[in-house]
Every structure is written in C-alpha cells, then in structure tokens.
Image 1 (cartoon, rainbow, N blue to C red):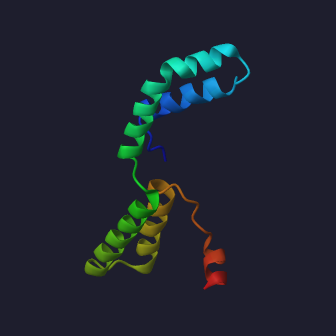
Image 2: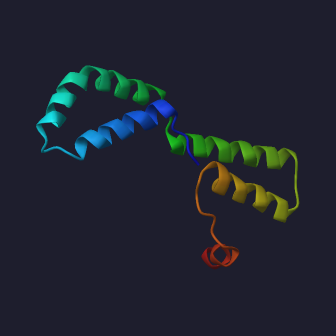
Length: 103
C-alpha cells in the first residue's frame, strides 16, 4: 500500500539524488541553496504524517466492534481480517497452518 502523496515522493527523490553524490561540490551548493525550502517541506511532511501503528490499532478495533455487532461466519471474519492486514495495512497474512501452530 502506498500512502505517500506526490509531494512527499518528490521530496524524498530530490534528497536521495543529492545525497547520492556527496563528494560533488554542486551537491553542497544545492543543499545550501535549497535548505530553507527542504526544511519547510520536511516540517510539512512531519506535521501531516500519521503513525501507522495508531491507525492499525484503530482499524482493527473498528472492524472487531463491527463484527461483534454484525456476527459473521468464522471464515468470513477471518477473510475480513486478512484483507485488512494484507490490502489496507500492507502486511503479510500468516498462512492458516502457521496461525494454528502458534495458537
């Protein structure tokens, strides 16, 4: 899952490109000239950033609350949780055998 906007991606690409060539005098000059803009852009990214762990816990709680109010067959519940973890949170879902072995 990709959650970065184009602004963030461009900022990361620009910084990565500059930092890959630290030995070039042009890199230092570019960083000196761009520093105020880079700093303000990084601060903007930081202020808009969301802690993935917080969102993950909120989504998991909301889905479990919904399932408590709207009971589903066990297979359907597990499928919903798997989709949440795989598609929304971008995590690998454990195989059923691995889940059973760890239980």
